[in-house]
Length: 189
Image (cartoon, rainbow, N blue to C red):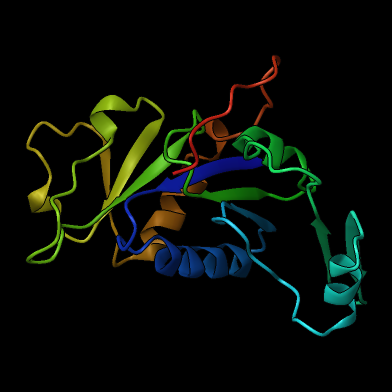
């Protein structure tokens, strides 16, 4: 499995570009899994449906399976720290070709930084790559707005096919190996 993170500020377009990247990878015959952090309480099952009712009745785990998909919901009995990106990756089927991680911008996983110039009136956004050696490339809609000393490969955010091409060309260095030691919890934001 190859693993790569896509990190950037909220509103930079991560989800939109990832939707296209995932589709293009699948069109090239690649199997893709995604890890994304969710904030606070979230549900994937619909209130009133059986899975929701069983979970609300106190089930620790609720596994829903059909001939087309599987979904596992696990309730933590007590609030706890978020899982690290490595703990989440360990939950995936290791036979997939790609694990794409959205967010986790402070993780040590190789990443593409998604960066857009903020709109008028928005708070300025700094680039993360100068402080993060795990960032291998930057995808932006306006390369002229990047600092002149940027030595990373710059990808066009408006050309997701180019991002997929870069991923495939760099697949050899994106092979995922879980850390040998239990990993510290990285901030998920």
